[in-house]
Length: 101
Image (cartoon, rainbow, N blue to C red; front, side, top):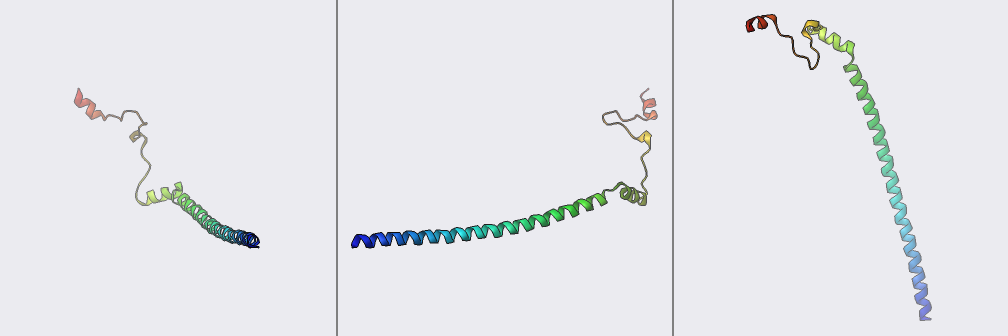
């Protein structure tokens, strides 16, 4: 009789432990699902913000806008004789050449 009580107690304890573990695992899964939904919403929000910033950047860096701003500040195109190729020596003024002679 005593062994039967121990066996019944062990079985009932095991069933209670399994039920408790199921409740804990369900709660953990529910918490992870809510966290995933929250992160997904934040990710969508950040992707929309990135798109808006890229559009704003494209507007701010548009050549026509920059040209208009430069003209408003009194800037114009650089004369070709003032330009040099990268890596090439800068043009030497003729008066500097005359002074070397």
